[in-house]
Image 1 (spheres, helix red, strand yellow):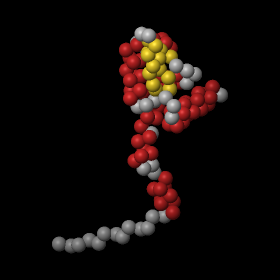
Image 2 (cartoon, rainbow, N blue to C red):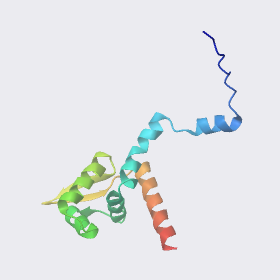
Image 3 (cartoon, one colour):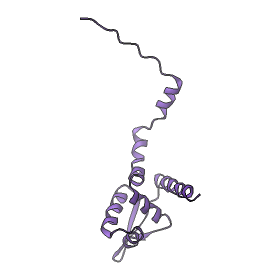
Image 4 (cartoon, one colour):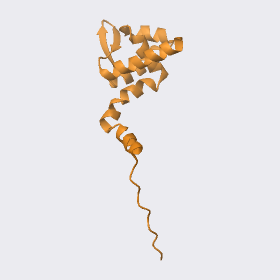
Length: 120
């Protein structure tokens, strides 16, 4: 039975250490979940863009997106659960608006930048 010597790990280079330190910790990664909920689903991205100027009803959003009210409501539920949008009932209609918060604002800024790059 031979015993092979394991190579000694080399000390990490400054570049590797800097890259390791740049990784997000669990808290920062959790903050990004709401951003992923938007950017990783095109319909939700469009909902956020449509709500950027101000509140809209589910019916208005469905019409703008060319989707059913049911499908639009399902996306809005995901966004509401993630803290991206808030709902306010006015009579029989429910109006949605973007929730205040730094991650929502950052996401809107990314979407605005993408729209301006595409328009250029």
